[in-house]
Image (cartoon, rainbow over all chains, first blue to last red; front, side, top):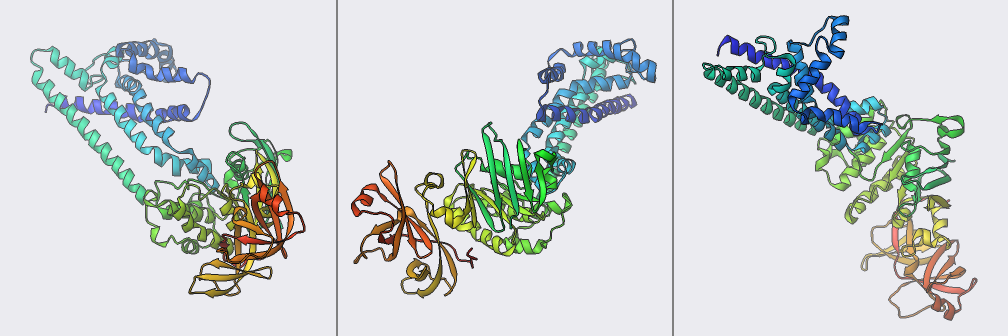
Length: 227
Length: 365
């Protein structure tokens, strides 16, 4: 495999990894809020989260451009105050991937939080456990398989993200050109078929490894419970 | 001496008002009532899972809740061991981790050694098992052990047997009796099964429609005729104390002395002189004016009619005194009229069936 191909794969992995890393805790927080609390505008929050899943990715990409571009509402502030920029950089690709993966992360986590019998937390309290202690010893371990499933799904989505990414941060080799974008570019050129095939195989391998890894982790969690 | 003092008003789940005012001493106090009578709500308020509107809750002179002084201890700070109807074992932990949860997650140091509780509840062989693999009875025993190891000042049991079938119940009951004797921990026992109350409790709090309608010694309350509907007509009856005598091994019967008169109960594994507690259901007691002969019912007790309650139904509730104990009988209103049963009349109570509820040494108050 060519050096260029390897750097594309590494960049994609980095983008997807960073996207999932930041999105997971936030998704957990939102899932918790939706599963355990009733508040005004709950359905609005729910709709907002689902939006990237239902609107065309190009629209999400455009929205990101408007909000986080260097002249965007939030992007301009970030640029002026922190000198930080998403536009046309790999961080922007990670942001786009994270936003697109977010609904896929929230859903399984929320379902698994809802599945936890709150009576178990009551039981923990009568046994002297503080709320924090009950969360870490009872709730979190029971929710973990759901979090893992969400993370895996989110990672896969982040890895394959195309539409929002190309709209928001364009297709810059070495900076924002992830696997999907690279495959797309190669298929545009008459001589790119062989290289494109190699990248396609690589992406399949990554996906399979990720699924196997998550299955293995889930099994370990389940078995760990027996002890 | 009272261990628990409750005087509260509040609301149960679907918004119906609940109020309770009672004290419980050492031993087992039964909180009895039909489903929806508010007994579980009261129990949850004691444990701090529900908040009463107003009132006080004290355990061992420590205030858990006092609306007038704005005191409300969180559940984790109350020393109430709670045994849930559905056990609520942590599914991701072994039996051992469940049992020791209060020690490692709750920072509670049990005054009773771990091994002692494990032995008391017969859990020795199950410590490394996963809760999912336990039978219903075993799960409930683990739940009881887990609560005991949280160093509770009082044990609250919410219908711990109701999710179990008959044979599992029979498997757990002896453990509960052992608990009562060995640990000396006061227990509040919620149930709608009158038989469990007759067998286990020393004091009874009867609830109906969200209110406490009677409170007192179990024997006294079981003898009261006016509690008929609340205690359940079909199963109502008296709790009577007696002393075991000779055992007839050939026929598998043991004599029991009840207030100077002798009756026979089924069973051959009694020690002579052992104190026994009998539950005699009102519907199993017939009344005869003269001592009957040639009858399959062998237990005849001479007694005096203490009270008779006749209402519009076809039945009459009769309370009979045999020396210092009361027996109840449920006969038809027609029989009562034809036999001319009135207070003070000397009659014979014919006991069709007597169940031995407890064989332990009982301190008779």
